Length: 379
Image 1 (cartoon, rainbow, N blue to C red):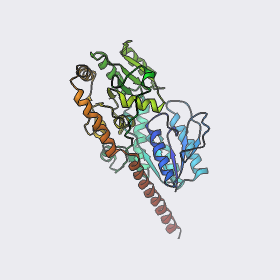
Image 2 (tube, rainbow, N blue to C red):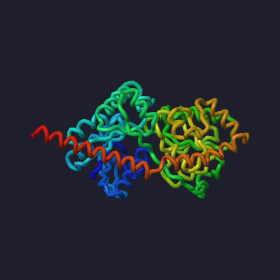
Image 3 (cartoon, rainbow, N blue to C red):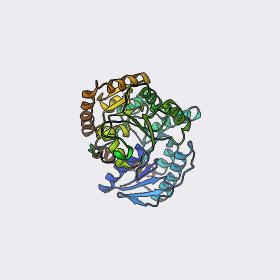
Image 4 (cartoon, one colour):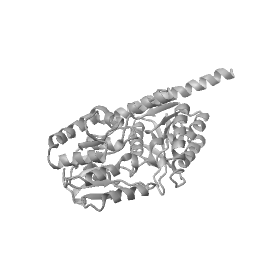
């Protein structure tokens, strides 16, 4: 079966959760005998294959609003004219305008919604209106719809009356070691970690304000950036106020180093609130990081309430003060084991791939059914 995956930056995975999912799932599908093509938008990338997947690197308009959709448009044209896949996986509801052209070409498409994009601060005004339309259009036009957690599936059912396939992301349970922590002048379990794009719905500002007001002396390492949200980065930096305990590391794409940060932090602070199942959260849990999660239905579902929760800067200050005094040490130790158990039981990549394989065969059946109907009409 020929499978095309469109709508992400592609692989190798360097940027975010979508890309990691494509790499993990696509490589496993290739191992199982599928002919997988991944469309990429990585300027200068020379790779034409990776981990069994065929890579097609295409251009994009480098603009916050147009980048994803422009690249996916080029990808859809290539898929229809040259690749001719049996089925397609389209990631990100913002790519909704490409659903009908792909399906008109006889290619059944499963569209992955990736959370509630219209609620992201960066899409205020016209952007939010577009994503509301795109979400509605994706649900209506996709051959099938994929949600990465039950809460998103429930929202789709309640809002649009359509059932979605619930297929989560995955993660690995790892013991990453600690020998590279010296590169950042930190030691095991003696720092706090926050990994996120600098965007308002990830609540980096509230976490920084809360930490700064606390008596905690262990440093807070902040990993992440946001090329289209410089105003928010400046706001977070102002909130940090030059506090030497708060260290901004920017994006870290060295996966070994990042794993060691996850696996050795005192706590992992997770402020995401609109994105469904978050890959960074799963990765931290799999590495044994005690989680301080923003209180929302998505994070509660993923952690199964095996986390300490917060919803304001005051909450963060209180948690950090308790940690500074050692009052939460037994709880943090229990969360290390609980997170790993949760990932091992519910978020394994092999199981995730099993579900996508089942979806692909369902899509292929839909394609054959459509062809049979066409033959009957012609006869």
